[in-house]
Image 1 (tube, rainbow, N blue to C red):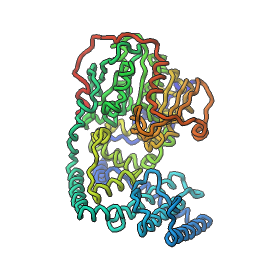
Image 2: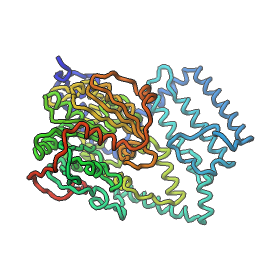
Image 3: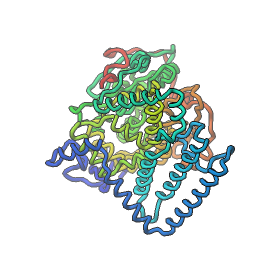
Image 4: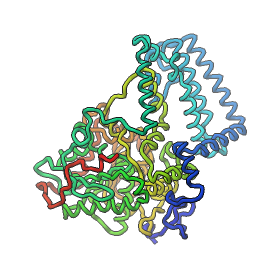
Length: 593
């Protein structure tokens, strides 16, 4: 029997083909009430939805395994001795040229100021980096230690070290000292004012107003268009053509429902939507509703059926005849892949192509986000959602920030609270501060079925009673990953090639989860690598591919647009259709708080 026709109802990761009275429901349904649920929900609110159980257990496991590994203890002792010797040598005979004994990581900007290379600051910096280096070695894998426990132990060590960094201390940071002397301490006054403002925001949960010059609808999300469909779940925007001839096949964009859509339509200089329209494509885009507690029961399948498929149905009704180029970003790409596999199973061939941007179908290598995804942590998040009906973006944003706390938390805190610098307003920053929510049921299913169960790539993800398979996809695919993505690591996105057999073009671009996607032509330092795998072509592992894929300067946007054109039929005059006009873009859902 084909994989796409095997049923798998249970949500338990260890029962891939089970069924039972709870079939189709999460093992821990966030909408179920129990006598202890209110207490657990209150506890989850106090901890911000974070459970330390897994981290404490991992720390204990690491300590016990290290205690039983005398060889590793000896190696760590030797490393400590050698590091101390290198520090003494550098302090006595500091080098003015070449690399220092210890260097910060690529994302660590705490020691960028040149005065960190002067005594005594260099000694403090090098001592701290030496300790970091030692702890990285100490929390490396050990015989008998679970890989996830080892990673959690390293994560906790890093968090503790980040707190104790000399860059966080007024008296040890040369940049703060120089700024305080130059301004007569006014930087510290401004820093205290900034801290008071931020604390007030945290306590009142009131975001800052949109800065001048970044208004949504006039500066951001300003590409001309009309809302042609509005449902309880989304608004569908059709953008006005800019060229005398357009490609016959329209483009339907599915953004992630965990973010406002206009990350793909920022300022005119870096709007992916505007650029597509200017290149002669007819673009439709989904603007998701910002769900409230009343929509807590919305499920993953609701988003597929009443979101992606409903939007596709509307596009093909407005422009009947040609197939549709479907594009999905982040979680929107995962939902698009699910919808496309379901369509393929049913013989629905309305897709001309599939583009996945920083989107995963395999969740075995989701980077450090997996540190926050186990049964204990997911249950904690479900308890938190039980009281609110949804999880908001600030909570998720804090999780993402903690993963790179040296740069995203401590560097910003130092510059804002000690140097008194105001956060510089950018279009991306305004979008990041625009909060969204995820409904409780959908988020629970996402965590359990995809993060914990990894069902999609293993042919265990059920849609309407039958399992779907990525190998059923026949439409050509264009898959984009970004080099420094800490949400969807590029190696994980690359594995889309392992679970599909269709014609596939893969691109790896510079930047992170968002900056790599919003990477327009002319962007400073833009580069990318790409390759094409024909249908049923051989698979190359990520590291081997990286070694042989040539680096090319420039944005990936033009390459993708050429690929879309190559998979389109012909140019035609822009078609008009009698549709409901529900107002101008960006619509109303984008303004929901």
